[in-house]
Each structure stands twice: as structure tokens, then as C-alpha cells.
Image (cartoon, rainbow, N blue to C red; front, top):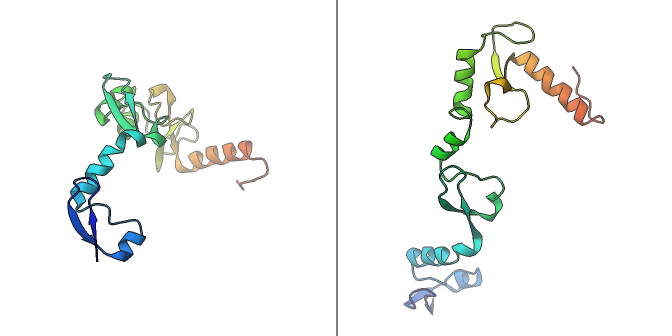
Length: 152
């Protein structure tokens, strides 16, 4: 055991030599380690403004492009309906409960016509059976990747 000084509170503590070689042994406790992580947080986090409420919030650099909302509540308000997880329920309440292409009534799915699951406008919804939904996405795969052929 080697005596070291904590990088946060400068308190003396004991650390194993093997831990020091691995890059540990810098802090006397978990709370000092957490304080250090929060001190470097501004370097790894970016401040962004919520598009709904205007509140500033922190997020990781990797999520900057994907994030527009500070909370689930603002996310719900930002979408046209009450959110994607409720879109299916609303679609089946408002649209005929049969496949839009073959008129089957079993194994129905909610299909987003433009492929954007965040666009929950009723005009973007289409009720399809599993078979028609699979055919639709297989034909799109063939169109996008002509070298990869999916058997129909």
C-alpha cells in the first residue's frame, strides 16, 4: 500500500500499487471521484436550448444533433400527437381496422408512409397487415440496394 493525496480534498489515503498502475488511486472516496467528474463536465457536455420551453440543458457532445428537447414532457409537446408510443392506439381508433392494401383484419401494424416514426401526423399513418408491411419494406430494400436481392 502506498500513501497518496486525494486530488480533490488533498486528504491522505492508502492505495494499492496495482491500482495506481491501472490509473486508479487518485481519490480518497467515491464522493471525491464524483466531484472530479462534475468538475470536468463542462468540457464533455454542451449546453443546448429546448425548442419547446426555451430552457437550457446539458447533454453529451455525441447527442447534440439528435436532441431538441430537455424532457419527455417537451418531447410530447413537440410532436404533433401525444407521442409515437400512443400513435398506434390513436390510429386504430380513427382508421378502419383492416389492411389498407389487401383488406386483411388480422396481424395489423401501423406503418409510417414517409418512414419517419417521429412524424405522427394522421396523414402519415397507414394500417397494414404484417405480410403487406413486409412486402413494402422488402421492395424498398431492393430499390435502395440493387446488388442485394431479397426474395419475394
